[in-house]
Image 1: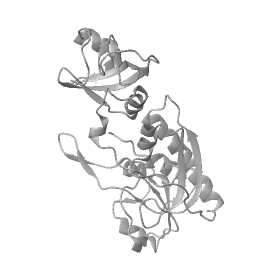
Image 2: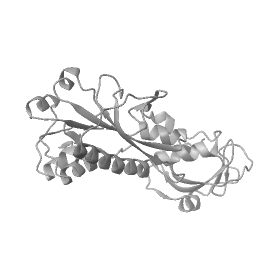
Image 3: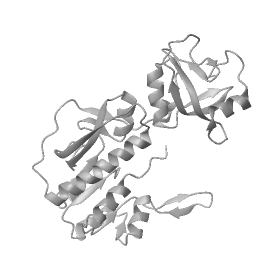
Image 4: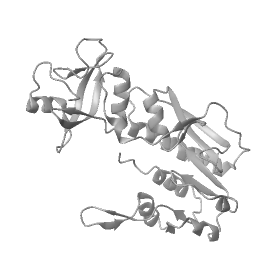
Amino acid sequence: MGTPDVAVPVLRALVSAGFEIALVVTRPDRRRGRGGELSPSPVKAAAMELGLPVTDDLEAVLDAGVDLAVVVAYGRIIPMRILEQVPMVNLHFSLLPRWRGAAPVERALLAGDAVTGVCLMEVAEGLDTGAIYSRCETKIESSDTLQSLRGRLVDLGAGMAVDALAQGLPEPKPQEGEVIHAAKIDPSELEIDWSGDAVAIDRLVRLGGAWTRFRGARLKVWSVRLVGETGSGTPGELDGLRVATGDGQLELIEVQPEGRARQSADAWRNGSRPTPNEQLGQ
């Protein structure tokens, strides 16, 4: 879904705060574009810009003279034999133990959580099981998209990491509460089920990449507005720019027809001219 690399702002914050960065480890270069040319990850590009040594070999940290490693969205399990030699802390973007795993921000938004946050934690054996050094919270606003919420969490996490490392890490506290896992978002989850609740559909749209079908072709829905009326009609039925759901109505604001650019829902309607009672999802 085009997830931005959240590690770059944290790296820049640590450098700006004056911490000595012995080594940056990130994913290998990937082939992109039609020419298939190798491109560095955003973290590697930022490290090179900052004049920092960078590698894709995790083993290199063992010989880099590292006192403490800061892990952010690394995406791979770090072997215990490395953890036993190099202490590590991790920034995780949820209020652990709720939403352990690959997609904590996405799952918090989809679930309709009122608050979420960031934890600075030990890197331990197991998935996001380490004890917590510090944490901070933020309210999830009804207007938050995945991008806006993640951006706010990254800013909070970067500041928290800088403060904690500057002051010295406190004694960590074990995680307490119900463990809930944040599985990676499967593309099938992004298809809109118009028989669902309007509020839940709105959250899915704010995640980014939600889609439906119109006249057999895929139509991405980038922005909607809760109408606040129960309304009537078959789920998916169009009434102007309003769409009936299983509970309530939504107004289309921005969409993207298959093979075309994003556009206002007004422009889409003027071009496609839906007939009365025509339905999305078909």
